[in-house]
Image (cartoon, rainbow, N blue to C red; front, side, top):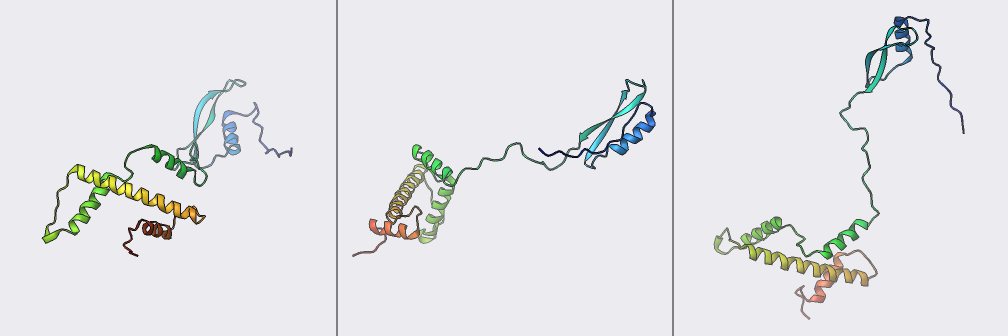
Length: 175
């Protein structure tokens, strides 16, 4: 193991008086500007004189220097697989209720006949619409995933969605 050089230190002997000792200590111990120094009186055991001991206390900074523990990073795809398992176990709705309801109301009001601007919706009707929409989307994504796997890919592309729609005959194309 390599040796490191020692820094030279001035010896503070017993023969020096308290004032001289303080000036030597101040020259030897240089503290950075961001560290505050508290001075507290202390008795010197050898000379029975009162001196000043310097206590170094780090100043508080407004910015945190380093967090205690870095955030855990997972490998690519690990979180996605965990989310897939979690959502396959549950029966809850995946789309948030309020944004879905706003979208349904907006679409319904756009196509209102005769200038009628505000439809009233029952809670059960909106919930049934959301259930049906999510069931449709999930089955559509499952079919397009099968199309991607058939093409020896794991990524769903727009052409997979179009093929799944065409195979379902929902595209409106007749033979």
